[in-house]
Length: 143
Ligand code: CMP
Image (cartoon, rainbow, N blue to C red):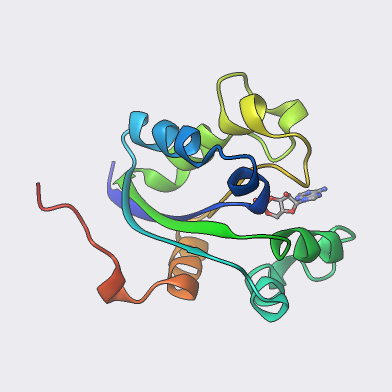
C-alpha cells in the first residue's frame, strides 16, 4: 500500500463541541500521521471555492453557511492508503448510516454537522491540500 496524503477538516461543530482531541486520537490510533495543521475561519469565498464541486447540489448554500459559522482545523494526514483509511475512520457522510466506532457514527449529530471532512480520491486530495497548505508548511516525519 503506497504512502498517501489526504486533506482533513475538523468542521465548526467539532471545534465548538471541544472534540478536536477525540478526532485526532482516532486518526493517530489508525496510523495516520498529522503532518500539517492550522486553525482558521473560512470566508464565504473560501468555502464556496473549496466546495465548488457541490455548487449545484441542494445542500450547497447550507453547507457554505455552516462551514463559515466558526473556526475549523485543517490538517494533512499521511500514511499507507491514507485517503481510504481516513474515510474508514470518518465513516459514512450521514451519521445514521455510519458504522459504529467511526467518527461520524460516534460523534456527529446530522449529515450537515458531521464533524469532519476528508478528501475522497487522490486528485481531490492533491487539490484540497494545495488549497490550504504550501509545501513548506507540510512536515513529513523523519522519525
Ligand atoms: P463533506 O465530506 O464535507 O462534503 C460535503 C458535505 O455536504 C458533506 O460532508 C455533508 O456534511 C454535506 N451534505 C449535506 N447533505 C448532503 C447530501 N445529501 N449528500 C452529501 N453531502 C451532504
